[in-house]
Image 1: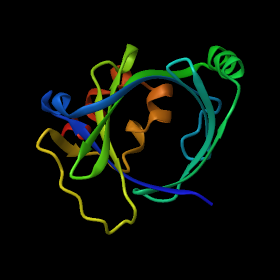
Image 2 (image 1 turned 90 degrees about the vertical axis):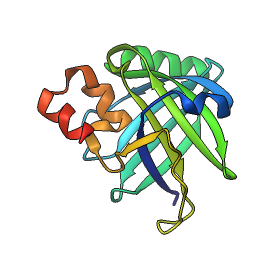
Image 3 (image 1 turned 120 degrees about the vertical axis):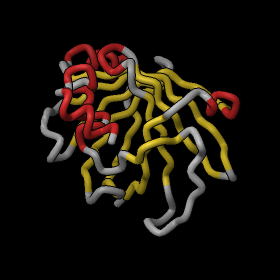
Length: 165
């Protein structure tokens, strides 16, 4: 069993850009629509690599995550067939010997920038960079699966304000 432990933050400014060590373009699709059950994600990276991932939330910080390589042609076809999609560029940064990622979303989620860091344990202490704003760990409406179904541009004003508080 693979358990992913991560924290997520909204990105407040562009100060992170000077620390980028790698960038990749992601296309993702979700084959099911309920965020309260297992998410089945198809992902391509730079149109060269492809994965199918089964993911389920354990609690706010932890997810079960099982990921397998699949043929790129199959992934492209599955993405085309799905109605729940997102595209983003993922930037990797190395800060204090830890890998952070910043996702810049496109399309109906284009106003969104999210930073993530994977942890070795729930109690691991991290230094949060100055450009990382509000913590959104565990906010289901801002999970990639939810954003594929209901993009940030379609969230109600009330829900958008909750995210910014």
